[in-house]
Amino acid sequence: MKNAIAIKLSLGISHLFISSLLLVACTKSSNSTANDIPIGIAFAQTSNVALLGQEGTDGVKIAQKYFNDQGGINGKPIKLIFQDTSGDETGAINAFQTLISKDKVVGIIGPTLSQQAFSANPIAERNQIPVIGASNTAKGIPEIGDYVARVSSSVAVVAPYAVKAALKQNPQIKRVAVFYAQNDAFNKSETEIFQNTVKDLGLNLITVQKFQTTDTDFQTQVSNAMNLKPDLAIVSGLAVDGGNLVKQLRELGYKGLIVGGNGFNTSHIFSVCRALCDGVIIAQAYSPEYENKINTAFRQAYLKQYQREPPQVSAQAFAALQVYVEALQSLDKKRQIKDLTIPQLRTELNQELLKLTYQTPLGEIAFTPVGDVIQKQFYVAQLQMEANGIKGKFAFLNIK
Ligand code: 1QQ
Image 1 (cartoon, protein in one colour):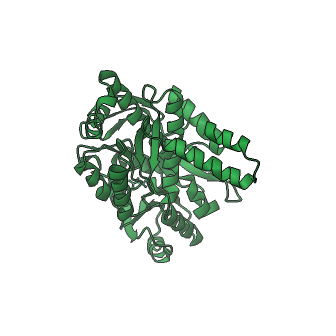
Image 2 (cartoon, protein in one colour):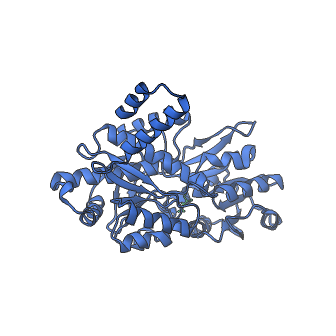
Image 3 (cartoon, protein in one colour):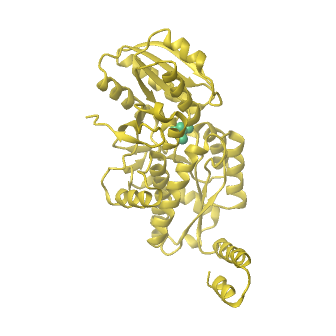
């Protein structure tokens, strides 16, 4: 940066040229890796999954600044290296391979979807590099291998809260229609939990309708369900397909409550179903109102930057980077991490991170021996849309 200012002062030339010189100088200085610790971020930046991936990116960026401002890993800053996974398995595999072999990161956060994790995480496992899922909630993710952990609580734990909250709002509910995206591992896992919850609560599961995450037209599924007169609809899809399904349910006259799964957990869904998103109930593994020191700091930083409350996936991504930072700090106290080779550091980091307890924006978390998150609090929110359908919010419900 200093060099760039010197260049700017000494050259009396056009603004555009100076800007490009500045850019080159800044890029160069931030590329010097000798002194920083590279963590790989494998989130979807493109495709229909980018709506969810973006929130992960927002969360790790806030965490990076927060921890580096506090001195990083005993003076060494964390450097994030982003590789776009796009929305499919191939994208995630390529991102992981680049992060491991070219970027030589010490650990990975990602990928965005469980569907991608089942293909990409075995690569991390084979290369003995830790990977922390920040938004993978399907059954079986931590069991992929010793190097795989997650901070995103399983659908098995989170999803039932939403159904119970719907019943609390309308105790008359009896007839439940379930919809799910059958080409996605997380949605298949989530619908199983939803369907079991419906039966466990003594409700009548009247139909199960399937679709694809790439679908845009849900008339057939909606009509099939509507003919059976449901008084609760439960949808497991991703933000775009799920949002469109909700929209078409309302357009075709469905008046009852709607529960959406974790794929609905982004305010980016507002632009898909607009005013018709209103009232959708979604379980949460995070509340912006949770009170501890680090959530207060995270919430303030997020609000300042985006002028809205932080969403769950951003908080989970923050927590994932926090796990790496605190495990690296702990390791560095025991033995100087600078003396370790990259393979040694990856392995020791993986062992260390599973041992600690963390005070995160999600509350206190720790890991089971297999790497699944242990978390205490869960919440339920309901979408509240303004009449113009452009602005909305996740309004937290009292579920006690
Ligand atoms: C998963 C998910 C996604 C909906 C989160 C972005 O929970 O794929 O496991």
